[in-house]
Length: 370
Image 1: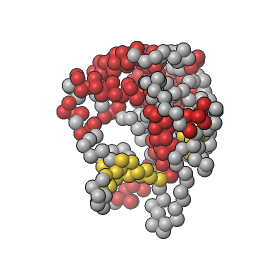
Image 2 (image 1 turned 90 degrees about the vertical axis):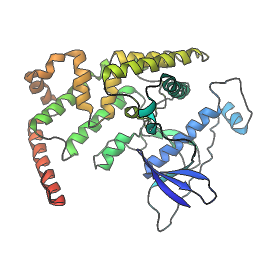
Image 3 (image 1 turned 60 degrees about the horizontal axis):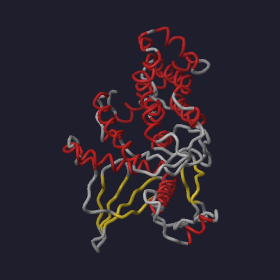
Image 4 (image 1 turned 60 degrees about the vertical axis):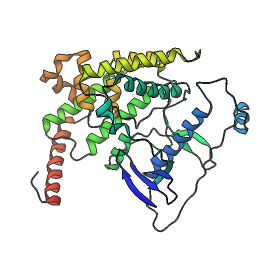
């Protein structure tokens, strides 16, 4: 057996057995490993139900259970291990396809090929439309309980939340907590940003940077009702691929990005027309996505997902919708920053001292000047 590391955002390890068969082992922490396995089960079920070919029906015990309203057990059960060399992390073993490679290996060479790009967009849209046809009742993540049943009962788990917790930032999201409305989830995510500001020792570089950040956080809280449609605040929700990295596909220039986005949306709308219409699926996925781009909900959502990029996204794409000139108005910052929390100015002075202590600890640890 031989192994080698596959580069990427996850800790993937390619395992080649003596028989020549290959597979991928993905190592994550126990919490994410559980939800990732559960999501894999959910996706497998979607594909087996043949959402794009509803006339195909294969009778099975699972189908009969579902017809009579019973839960369908998964093929997975807990298997605790107590090996002395247990690495202490969750893992998944998946089949490895030897004649394929990651998109990032070929994107720089072929991204200008309109035919290949259209094929990519069709495949992505097939996935998105399939997920959109299975509405979920709340915002959360899947887990498999002790009896092997799949449940949507875990808190939403994104890589950004994991990064905050790995940095010892307290996140007030209990594992068994889910969200029934968009509003409650947005408030919870904004609280995560507040927690990062409070507990990360190098959260600000200086007083000016601190004012810049807390003003953005204050306005994010005040403005969020303008970015989400009230008629959709209770769903339906759909599964989101949180590990899909647009930065590996699209360019940074906004004008160039929008041209590619329009191409993507055109293909999405074409594929929607090919699907059987569901009466309860109104508005369509493309309508919601297009509305989100026009109202800048797209950018607001990026703010929520990016602990480090929230402030730049806010001033570049959110504030300009309401008052573009305020970014150069000192009174705007002076007034609004005080509403972030009581005692905002003393807090920022303390954060500047925290940064100085942090830099001193770095110099001591690495014996270099920072």
